[in-house]
Length: 409
Image 1 (cartoon, rainbow, N blue to C red):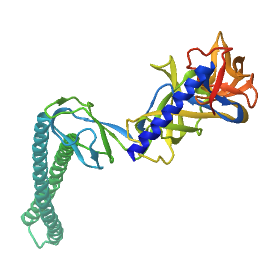
Image 2: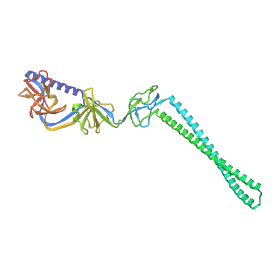
Image 3: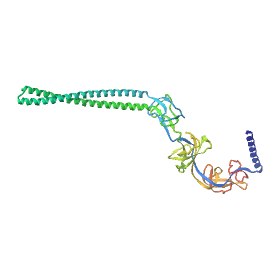
Image 4: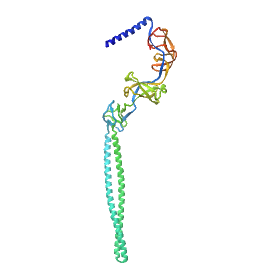
């Protein structure tokens, strides 16, 4: 099989060399031509440089609390699931604060419990004293009332009446003393309120410190791929320092820049061609999903407009970070005269082509319309069926040269 292909190649080369030799002997330059014809030409706006595949869902993961990196479980390119542990940071000072806050919270809780128990005991005692004082006072009042009646009727002496009056006065004083116990309860209630507030403050402080400590554990907020890692074991990180970049590869888009001069032609919804560098020759289809409202400085041109293209059913996976050439279809015409764009030349601001007429090269000025990398609309200068030279790389080719058509497109 290999021998057969080798022989075919030898025959083809020999035929090619023979054709060249023939043309040289005959004094004709062999050229390739394109026969002018009608067709469709598309207006294409190409990105000024290769675009980049990015993710619609991407996050920079950082630490809200500073500390030293104790553990790193992923590397660039690692695939993670939501909730997976990525890294762990330690802060010994924060640990001490948490322990001190827990101790303070325990002391405040114990003091509150003791005060509540003391208040309960005082409440029981006051209720008992008030009950006894109330009963004694009612009995003393009844005895005093009867003693007054008996004394009036002459049944008891004055000294017995005075004894009843003394017992009533003592009972009233005991009632006042029992009522005074309520103020003790009020004082205990105020003390309990203060201790309860102190306990709640200690709990809040412990909760805040515990939440800060929880943030020292870095987990994945969603499933994706680690595209960048900026943390190593032993490093000290300040609050807010970036640790990882996490991106979801299931929602890719291509970000590219369009020259400011062509930006007005590009609109959301237009069709685009994507040509990934990794898949040479393969064309992917996409749609313009965003045209950024601002124009920025660019390395390739003075100013450029950034656009985003969403792939449409890509035949192969577009990996994050891939380089992709972008062509946006911004217009087009049907049934127009077409030429290969490479066949057009320009000098002194005028466009022209070489046409084969009567076996010789003739320079013909043309007026071009819509154009892209492959085809150009011709508004004037050539007619349907004329042969335009496409092999312009030939050194001695010039107007008036005798030529022989080697290949016609």
